[in-house]
Structures are given as structure tokens and as C-alpha cells.
Image 1 (cartoon, helix red, strand yellow):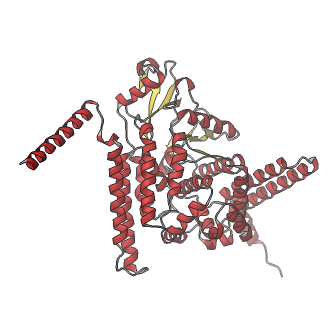
Image 2 (cartoon, one colour):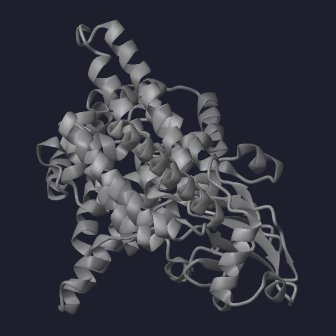
Image 3 (cartoon, rainbow, N blue to C red):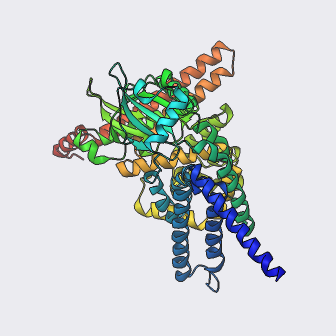
Length: 523
């Protein structure tokens, strides 16, 4: 009887605790998804299901058979879908990390990247009440006191924030980027959860070494959540690339900006991968690809200050309303990579070697960048080209569909080695690899991949960067003059080669060939 009474009492107590907890959560307006235990439980359950699938799916399956590859592809697809779903459910940092994975086209199996890419369109939206609350807390005024109009429907929503179109009292149209109110508090806890679960997965699957992903999130998330840092980055890159009249960076309104609110000029345009938009507005696809390459080569090789999130939503194209010239609009300046000088010089020399097919240079500078004996894999990962193309010189061989298929297949076959490589190379390299993949994705859609102009721009920037570095290392005026002269000769050689390519592909060349064909042949 006593034991029965004890059970009843325990049940009543448990029900009371459960009811009172529910009552408290309801009246405090706390959503279950805001609780760390719920977010952890959801992520842990997903990790367990995916791990079990990989542990059991390949039993009694001979490695390398047709059935093995078919089952493996199915497991990749199922797992990617579960990963996508948990990112959508937990939102915030989970979506941000999922988007990062989705951008690694040539590093992860295609089943993962294609499935996770949709996270760019699955970003959560905060309610208007939440937006007003953030603005009230950070700017100290109501919306109506700051703007004469403020569109309730977001112009765009991302994993960490959303953007609203508004009009200032003086009539200027601005974009107001407002951080989702719960992201700041949840991000550090979410990263701890990811770190723990990745350690568990690494213990189960020793070849799975993706701890670099958590390290990057730890380092970058606080920077991305500080919108004042984003504003400073925007002004820095605008000043750094002011020589490019095709580049537009929206002006920041500092009086209406805080760590969670960023106000800037509103600029309209089409996404950089929208070929139909470019056709309708008479925008030259090749010009856009060429200018994008110039801009990023300057950032990476010359300045070492790199915008690391060039997905299509952050790079717009348009015709300038005043000049009617084509412009590239660069948005979302939260994530930049500052390259140290030694790393940047090794990276410059590596790309020079890759363009020329200089095998000794490829090995030397790949090793200096931490690749070790995996330098052939590193060269293929960096360029998204086959070893055959790398050996020939990537500027000499066009990209083919069969080569793309080979690269994607190898990304699956060599996943353990790729994981090891990514854990070896300097942390600066990880964001550059992501940036490379995003730019390659844009070029693929625009059908301008591996164009000669992109290699020429890279060659120019590498030559200028190395010459500048050499001049900084000597006090001899004679030596500085020699370096400058050598740089000028190299740049002239590149320009001459570019002219030859233009003549070869131009109408002038076809006229000359036609004229020669009419000349009498003499022995």
C-alpha cells in the first residue's frame, strides 16, 4: 500500500511539475525551440540516426561493387536530408553552418551539397513585433520616429538577420538589416552542441575529421553577429577597391546602426547567377564574370582582405540609373578573411605555378601551405580540376563535363583524405576554399568557367603582389627599380598574350585568314 501511495504521489508530483513548467513557459512566452535542451535533443537524435544508417547500411556489401555505390549514394542522400531538416528546425547557427557545407561543391559528395544548398531559401523570418523590439532596444526609438515608411515584408531573410526596405524622413530609401533577436543568445550554445556531436561522430568514424568546421564557426560567428564590424568591413573594401568604377558598395548610415541593426543605402539589382535578368537588362555575362574575377583577384592576391560569402544573394548586378553602366553590387560584409603576408605570397606563387603547370612549384608551395604529401589532392581541390589538367597547366585545358563528373566522384572517394587535408591546412585556407567554390558556382551558371580572362587577371594580380612584397623587403633604390622594371615587363607580356588571344578570336583574324586563302600558293 505504501509503495502504491508512493507511486501515486510521485505521479502527481511529476504531473504537477510538468504542468507548472508548461504554465510557466506559456506565460513567459518561451517557445520550446528556444530551449537548449530541445535543440540539443533534436541534433543528437539526428546524429544518432545518421550514424546508425552509416554503420549498418554497408554490412555484407563488397566494397566497390555497383550495388555498394548505389547504396552509398542513397545513404548520403538520406543523411543530407536529415541534416537539412535539423538545420531548418534549429535555425540560426545551424542554418549558417549548413549553408557553409552546401557551398563546398568540390569537397563534399554531391548528395550533400545539392540538398543543403536550399538552406539559402529556407532562412527563418522574425515577426514584425520582434523587429520593432530589436530596433526599440538598440536605437531607442519607435519605428515611426525613425522612418516615414517601413515595409513589413522582408526584402530578404537570412540565417542571422533579415532586411527591410524603409524610407528616411529626408526621402532617401534605405535597407535596414535587423538581427533575429534569439540568435545572439543561442549561437554559442549551438556551437558547443555541434562540437560535442562532431567529436562523437569522429569517435565512431575516425576518418570523419570535420572539427575544422566548428573551429571556423567559433571564430567567425561573433564577427558575423556584430553589424558594426560589418559596416567597417563595407567601408574598408569600398576604399580598397575604389579604382573599380563597376563596383558598388552601399553606403552605411552610422547614426542608425548598432551591433544588431545595420542601415545602408538601398540598391536594387538581379542576382549574379540570373542570366534571364541580365538578358532583359542587356548586361554582358562575360563582362560580369571578368569584373568579378578582377575584384576577387585584387582582394585575395594584392590586398589580402577577402569577402568570403559571395553566394548569389550577396552579389547583385544592375545597370546604373545615372550612367547606364553595368555595376556589381557587393552586399553582406560580415565575413572577411585577412590573409597574413607569408601565406598570401605562397598562395600567389602556388597559383602562378598552377596556371603554368609548373609541377615543382605546385609541390613546393602546396607543402608550404600545409598540404604535405597530399599536395596533388590539394591542387585538385583548390582548382576543382583533375590531376591531368593540373599537370598540363589549368590555363591550357578547358573544363569539360566529364572532368566535372570525375571531380565530383573523387570528392566521394577521397572524403577521408579531404577531411585530413582540411585539418592540415592553415585556417585562412578554409574560407578561401569556400570562396573559390562559390565563385566557381557562379561561373558555372554563367558558363564562363576557366575563361582565359580570369587566368590573365589572376596572373596580373599575382605579379603585382609579389613585386610589391619584394620592394618592401629591400632598401636599395637600385634593387627596387629592378623589381619594378621586371614587374612592368611581366605585365606587358600578359597584355601582349591577351592581345594575341583577342586577335585569334576576333573578326579581324577571320578576315586575315580569308584573305590569305585567296592569295596564290607558290612553291
